[in-house]
Image 1 (spheres, protein in one colour):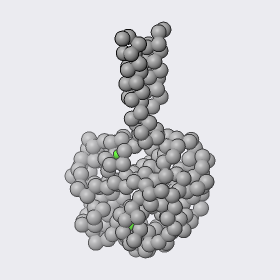
Image 2 (image 1 turned 45 degrees about the horizontal axis):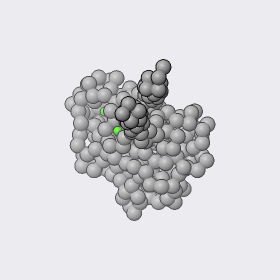
Image 3 (image 1 turned 30 degrees about the horizontal axis):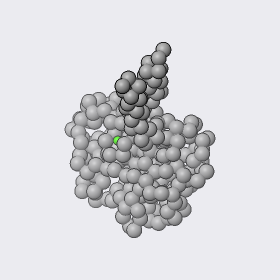
Image 4 (image 1 turned 45 degrees about the vertical axis):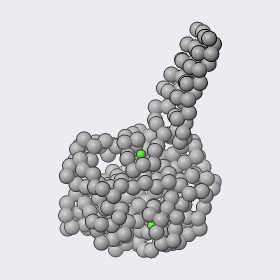
Length: 258
Ligand SMILES: [Ca+2]
Ligand SMILES: [Ca+2]
Ligand SMILES: [Ca+2]
Ligand SMILES: [Ca+2]
């Protein structure tokens, strides 16, 4: 095996090891394995994601648990994963993030470390109320807990900003043909925040719960998981470096030849 074939084999080996692509925060959940074929399996997602799926449909009188409201208030599917440095969250809802199809504001993400019923952190999604979009807030307070329960935090009201500001993207144009209710409109959120914002509380082994609902909390999504491995997806930029590495090998090869 000469140097070129050895390099090529190493490169292919690296590609094979990176079966998951890095997550791109763009409001498109294709990188999470979410498809749009008009079947229930669209929400299955990739195996690297911990998920909760509860896609409902119908009009205002349809019960969603804990409230009513049908598709316009449906919390449909949530996905959670992480790299060594970043926590990623994505979800789908029937509520337009600009609030145009409901009379309630969209909500923010709440995180319970240790699954003990206390919401330890919030993640600001819109950047309203004087808070910064994509920032993690410790010791959060909430504008309310909706109409139906006492422990479903809706929108962040205040908190102590921690860590560097993450990324949030969401879509405000309804998209159809996702899941079995093919004419329903779906909206998508995608979030990346630095794990360092949570201090040691998100270290490997940590149990945590991710929660989202809208201002009325008609429907609620929760993913409970354990950070059982350091990383489930590549670091942002890892795969971008790989082709550069291969180009570098090719350049070496050309130089060796000339
Ligand atoms: Ca994406
Ligand atoms: Ca639905
Ligand atoms: Ca639902
Ligand atoms: Ca907010």
